[in-house]
Length: 152
Image (cartoon, rainbow, N blue to C red):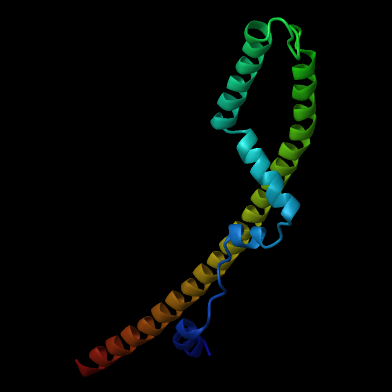
């Protein structure tokens, strides 16, 4: 029986290794993809630099250019309101994206664990094959010794 498994083993189909990105991306909704995109943009240097420039332009426009009739005078209350609303909307979206990334990491760990289990089973199978080969070789060596000892 072990000899049959030894020779038939290479013809068995190994289970396909799944890519965690493919598995996870299949379940994403439009809102999930949108939240990931908003988090990617909101956490980029381009956004930080662009928004910093926007605030500088806002301040210069309301203090230097429109000195007679600024639409948001010095304490910049309207700008503060807009920043607060942006933060109130952006923070939960970024947290949703982070939660999804944590779920993706958990899936990645689970798939790694499954791969490790398959590898461990394959290594055990290889150990059995090597033990079988060593036993067969040992029997043949003993038979050769007997034949050589009887021929003397």
